[in-house]
Image (cartoon, rainbow, N blue to C red; front, side, top):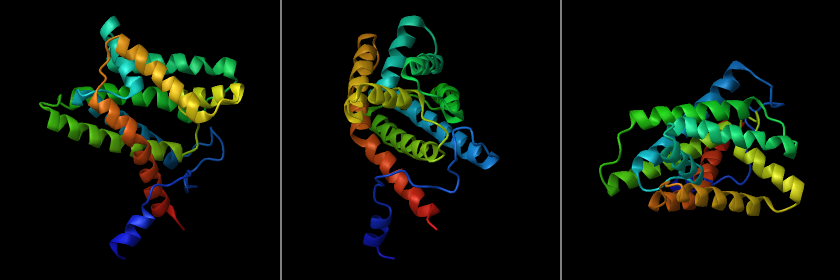
Length: 222
């Protein structure tokens, strides 16, 4: 196999592949499926913690969590948990229903953001910070691809996004953009860090998830 063939097979995937571990319903649990879900969420949380420790700017929702942390004194992990729980409550008027993956998302991502910020030292300089950001974005992409392909329910934020889309008819992309801008603005006003890392996340996270889905599709094909 030459390089061009390999790149073609691992190109960004435009759809969510149907994997052997994909559930038939949001509560269709098996030990292997739950293990893959948990691993994906753990990787996601650790990736997000690297973005925090880079000190160059966070993803929009983490900017909000960091701003709340600065204003209240609560830990970054607990702030993330509180935000996710609040967003989940917004599902009630939107008539969205959570799955096992939704609840696991709330708990595990928050827990491993907290753990990661204690495991990984703060980046000593911009160069190491950029490396943290790139590794973090990669891990978030890998974690997202594993979590999504389990089919056990969307995360609180994704569920809110699709719920608003169904209720209003506004395009999903526009809903997502509006939510991200509002969240980022509030977080920044509260003192959350916005910078190069935020820009890198915005530019690269879509490709990171798509490439990871492409790899999953390739590895599970046949």
